[in-house]
Length: 424
Image (cartoon, rainbow, N blue to C red):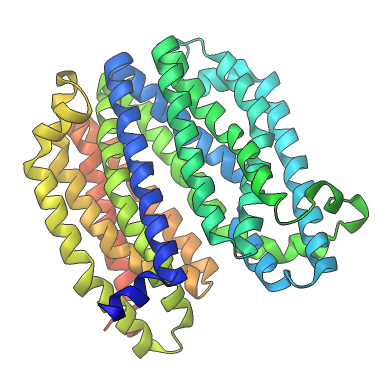
């Protein structure tokens, strides 16, 4: 009992427990939002929400230049050097604000163009893109501040910000969807991230005097050059990935209808919730171990630890989800979404393959294998896009989950060959 008490009193245990709570709250928030969308906007509204979410993800990644990981690293290394820390904060803040303002102008003045590109000619949601243009700079700065807080080692504050952010997102979503239906659902995607700025600014001012830190004479272009090497992999994944999913969804809407696109968005949402557990474990526990591994033997131990300890539990959990699929759809959505049950097998199979490849894919980040990562990522996205385009014509919306499963299988094989010395 004394040993257990000592463990529970450690900072690591407390931070891990708080992070688990944050993940559970994020999932709970997502489930409640999904139920609201199902009741108030239906499958067609769900498809439009999916389109905007993919577009927003790419836009947000561009606005932050993929600098998050690099900011955390550099702030962590220079947090005792006040002068250098001020240069990092000033340089990145000025750069991100400049990029965000340019993007905002493009969104605001070309709102008609973006409405047609994302939603099509049958929908008039230009106002949503004007709202994004106003919220984007606030969001970009909030992500930057969160990375600085993380780099300063204030892990509890980072988790608390995420928890508060999820709570704000839930309240905004409930209010907007209830009042304005589909338009409200779209605006909630826009408004919630922008409001995170006020939370992060409160926490950053407890650590440093942020406004006094930002000075133009502290701008150092060398810092941007150093950060760019960290951003390339993030940008390729977080920009091109959502854009490919957006293109596939638009193809589904054009080929077999907006309701079918809504069904695919529904199964994708469910997938996002349970995949959070795998991605969190990989990021928090396995990525640092891969980064510290000094040779193939040590890397092999990390890989097989995941396959022996985490993957079997994940497979069992997904098997349970499959047999409970009718109950899950009725609980989280409405009877109108019951056709989604036909997509579970292909989605779950694909996600088992995806989880199997994720641990290998994290080796790209751990060892900074930038070129290999970009080539493999672009290859995988190309396979997914063209294969889904072909299979949709023969199998309808089921063709997409089939394409995802096949793409994940090919990607896993490619990674097994590439990392064969570390794996076998």
